[in-house]
Image 1 (cartoon, helix red, strand yellow):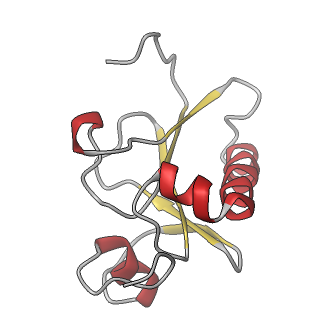
Image 2 (cartoon, rainbow, N blue to C red):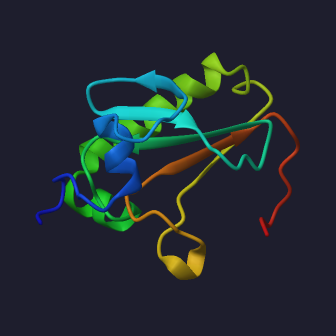
Image 3 (spheres, one colour):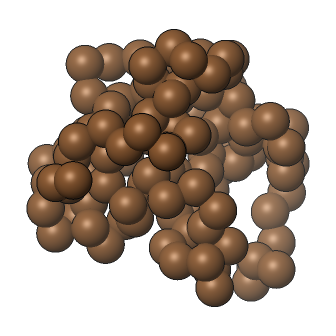
Length: 120
């Protein structure tokens, strides 16, 4: 299948199709955000493009304007979740060795507690 096209075996494509439930907190024509089912911070939201790209590198190379829209919406969500002023982290895990388990690019928006550096 071509990049950008829904994948039948992708959990996030199934969420987008309404086949798997999720707690949606924000939607635009290009981006959907929902609460992580295994939160690592008081605010832990996954921000994904509606189009399927396997990882951040693929998204940036093939749809840089969509990558920008995803980051812009993450900032909007951070404000709505009241973590913008205290600070938040946006994380893209790219590849299994970095902890990516769903191969539909997604940003983890984390906040609501102190976040140490370097991350674990």
